[in-house]
Image (cartoon, rainbow, N blue to C red; front, side, top):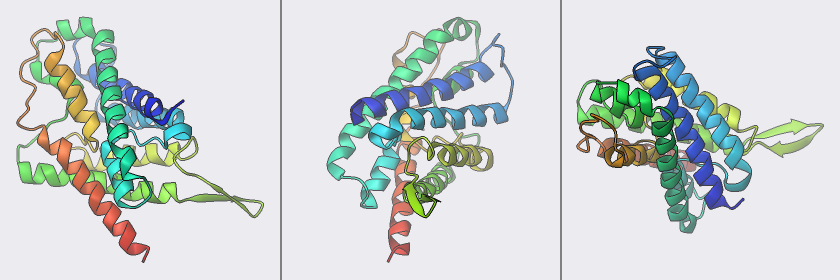
Length: 245
């Protein structure tokens, strides 16, 4: 599998599971309707896990433009590969969002709340304060990116032989736990996109899919989950580089 296809499939699986749990919890007449925040954050974390397990051996499983940019800033990933990774991530996220709509189409049709339908695809602030909303997304992504640097550089020592953890199957576990705790601890204000592809690509699908009574895609908010994660990842990369001096 090429790195491009790995990033596409891994991100597709991430969004399929993540947006899927949002649909299950938020849409009318589903088995999981009203299940709550613990269910949402747990499924997003496990969605990260399966995406990383699949893509990790082939691409490093970034699954997130902010991670690709952060690793490039930190010197651990070639800048020349960043555009292709972001294209794969955006494409995979759009495919995942489209599959969620297909699986839950009857429930989209049965749901009258336009905000609930948008919430399946995109994040939004509970209290509209752009500066604080930006900070919330940046801080959450900072935590993710900072931890990723240490997972990527980590080793397990077995019989005096170091084995790299990286971001493959073993590394998927701490990444998933990191995303889980970010959601539980910092996800309340904005829904913790912490990934431009997670919000922007599904928001595009919300805009173009024939969803009954879908309402606005709220493009006036979209710049926050698109840019704040990149800012948070850049700060994490800069701090990590500084600490290595």
